[in-house]
Image (tube, rainbow, N blue to C red):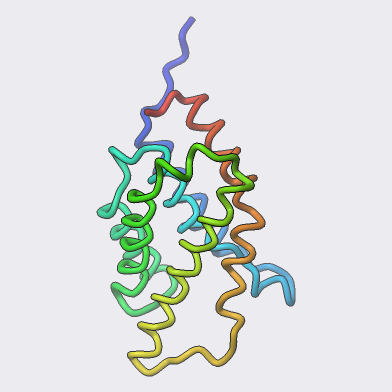
Length: 162
């Protein structure tokens, strides 16, 4: 008996929902500074895995949802995620052929670009960052990238998303 499997769109949307939930979970004490930017990492993965389906528009939409969830200036994260999606789409052929631990260098660059864009916009509107802790989520992100990559890759293969 064949069990019907959900289409790819539902699984991708569910992965973004889980990323939003993971972003909302507070971490203890000093570790809170290193909370990975789960939404951006999930976007990067899907842009690499499904470049014909997930792109700049999805990055913009997810960024708007992130702006609403975090109470940020509307469009702040949307712009940053659209830029990250664009850069990922430009480089995905080179990135996805290397092992996940080597991908972390490219992912670090993408996460830092996202952080700099968000805080540049914050500075322009009068809320400059007070210290260098705003770079810490990028470090947490590269620490979690290999695990996230394997989980999402296995999920994509299991549900035969293409």
